[in-house]
Amino acid sequence: TDQDITRLRGVWGQWSDDAAGGSPLRIPVLPTFHPAYLLSHYTREVREQMWHDLQAVAGRLGTATP
Image (cartoon, rainbow, N blue to C red; front, side):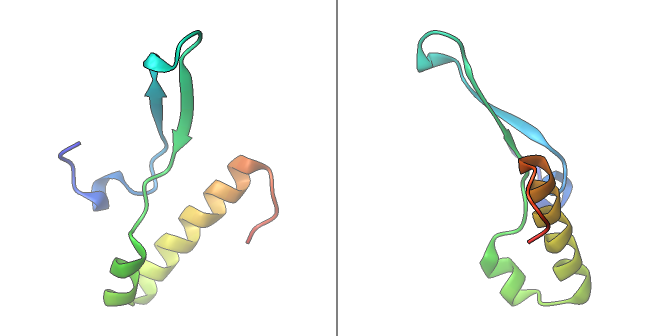
């Protein structure tokens, strides 16, 4: 995609592999910040966004909040 990560992060998408043979492989993905970005932009807002993303993934997996 040519969209900026700030527009993509926090919005569920799907990765598909139709060349896998048989039924297509579909994997949910949640774009988030690269760890280096988090370290270089260490603000409360960015940390809260990253934490929200991690909680969303944990919820999708059916696990307790990390």
